[in-house]
Length: 286
Image (cartoon, rainbow, N blue to C red):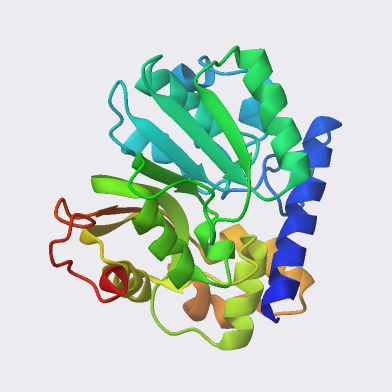
């Protein structure tokens, strides 16, 4: 798809997902599943202690593939930004961890999701939360203003991942951290199979190979890059969906099993970036 088409599809899918949640008909993910079997990608991401901290509706609104708030180290007084914040669950959890002296921003381009997030904010009584309308390729915040960037299965949706990572680098303070959950791939896969599986996990624009993800982060200027698998998807997870696409799952199993995974991705903006000192990546010096 061309880039405008990708953006339109993403907005439509997530707008529809927000409306399903608002009417009580959502299961637990963007991709429709049977009523009795929630999407294995989006389910069971938050433990009971986290679930008790936020409105139940916010938990049901989760459409992510991981739990960046459980793995990102957040300190009182810090400023956090969630790229593609959806219904706001990760923003609300982050806001509690940074406390009243900190702040948590959520950025989303979908009006329906922003309405859902602001309603969840109201229910939670969160005063240190602000939801912004905009695109993750053009973050509407000044440079060097954010301590921690989180994101939950959103960067893979962008057709301009290099631009997203450069923008993340720009708004982070020197020494700031990127801590995102995302879907990545591992090794070569037949393009037709790759497209079908990525459709299953909701990645319209396509997930990056884990090596490519590292390379793009490094090119944006980040250091201390880590890619840690958190969920590895097996062929049986996607069997029903792939069969509905007319594909012979047993024949395709070697090209699917273990090659698609959710991962926690960490990176750091160097402390000397943005202060006139040489940086470690070509894009941050351009």
